[in-house]
Amino acid sequence: MKTVGLIGLEGPAAKVAERLLSAGHELVLWDKSKKIRDAFKGRADLAESTRDLAQRADILLMMLPNPNEVVEICTTSQGIYDSMKPGKIVAVLSAALPSHSAQLSEKLRRRGATFVEAPVIGGVGEIERGSAVTLVSGGRAAYQELLEVLKSFSSRVYYMGEGFSAMAAKLAVSIIAASYVEALGEATALATSAGVDMKAFAQVISSVYGDRMPFGTSVGEALEGSPKPSINLTSLITELRLAIATADERNVAIPTAGLLDSLYTAALSRGGDGDYTAIVGFVKGLSARPE
Image (cartoon, rainbow, N blue to C red):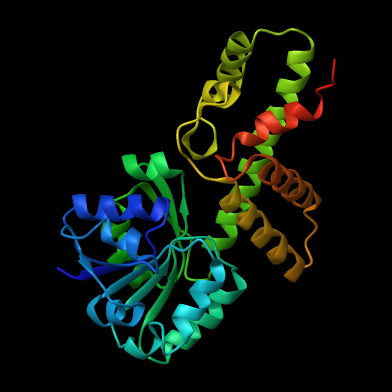
């Protein structure tokens, strides 16, 4: 059995680690936070550094909240670069700038390693249940080798082709998710002003559009302000900004994404880094008038 290494254990990455352990994979873990690493002590091998992990793992998964860390870890001697050798696979599960993928692939190819985009779409609960969706682009042979690993936490894995397109697709989905929930906030504000019963309103929305919202939250939970853990505001804002940067590079107009970034950032400033569905209450509050 090949050894799987996971770099990053914060938030949803911890659930990925749990699923990999439950599936019986030989696992080595690293996170820059010793406190987070120590939560897995006795259940998985813990690496001393990213370099140590890269020396021990055949398949390296990266799931980091800061996309700049991906580049630094992949390309520097302090990271995994010097430990790369033929046969190793590096797969990025978290959101990153798509334009970096070709550069990272070429850099790692010089060491004989294969780079793959494998962004995960799903909230904490979906990963925990093994029902996330994962998109993969890069070499088909690497995809086939990764498939059983990715199925540990994904109910569906889609191969997007050899050209690097999975990360851009992930960011496009994030725009849809952010738009849906922000629109729910505006709809709720209007319905509330007319005295609409919120339980009945949630049932209507669920009947017309389905009960499950992006990242696994139900409509009723979002309207009540009591969602199950999914994705936090900071993560969604990061993905929106990566989408905007990618659109700028490609000279594509996505004006709504910029508006969403502003609204979600304002919600973060006002209420802290809660679940992304906090945007519903924030938008509703914009219409509140003092008595």
